[in-house]
Image (cartoon, rainbow, N blue to C red; front, side, top):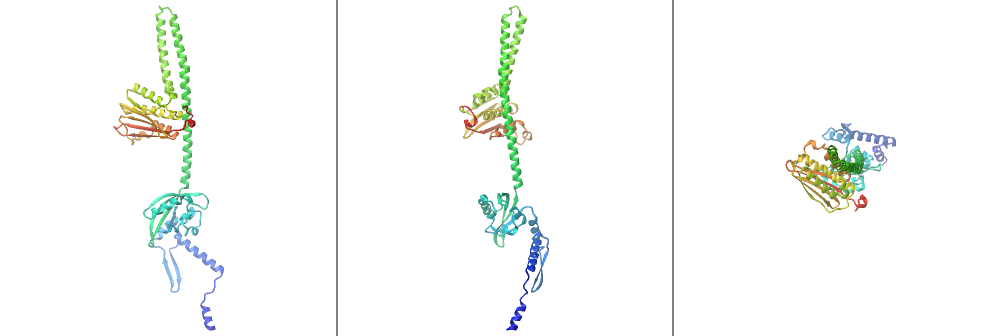
Length: 404
């Protein structure tokens, strides 16, 4: 028995020290790292049957190296949505170690508010490729926006999903900065338009009141002089008459300039101003102008001014470019919006014409509406006329400052 025990104990391998175990573990980890990075072409395994060489230069070697070194995060999910494998980039997106990510549920790696969206993507990915945006729950605290590309995958006879995650944080940051810059530019444009309209109103009133009154006084004085001259002073009477005609002509010019700067009829409401503008357009161009207007309502002054300026610019384009014989203007309230539609039966235009993209008139109309949260759309085709539809959200009279 002693000899038997002695023989069995001689077959038991000697216990390894802690230092030797640590050294072997480090060597194993280094080997795994080298295999992952593609630095190893083959490994030699010592077994009871001698040494065996396993080559790693198979068909999947190039792909393994590619996946490990790509800038996007990559992961393979099992049928229960467990992370079976991922590259280091995917782990870095989560701010976690590689081993802590592998084996975890992908649902736990996603921002809580986006888990329902991820569920929908995963269900779709079992049938066909799909894409979407979600936020990962990074260990750094803040959610990390990523673009996911998912594809169905058969892995050892089971259903799996291949996932590629692209970091969108830089793009989202640039998008926010661009949106803020655009908002600042729009606010500045709104302020400039407001100042311009205020200045137009001030100049129009000064021209109409001061210059108009002065010219009227000149006419009165000339008429007084004509009444005191003897009838035989024909040259003087003729000179006074021609001066009175000149004064009348200047007064008409003053009224026209004042009205073009800002029609005083806008103070009576948008519908009245649209009707007046349509009559002026028809009288000046000979193009018939049909109207369909709502009952007079309290509308914010800035909304009235914006739609009136859009109408002016559109009718100017009709007169200059369309060759139309008929124009129709419709102003209506559509739920919470005020809509202005102008249509003509002119020659129309091609939307693909590159010269239209830089048209200041069209850009100005869009900008006026956009400043107030609205928009302008154009519809046209060669030989089929043109339609311009502008809309602006309505605000309450208290908010807008409009008087009922």
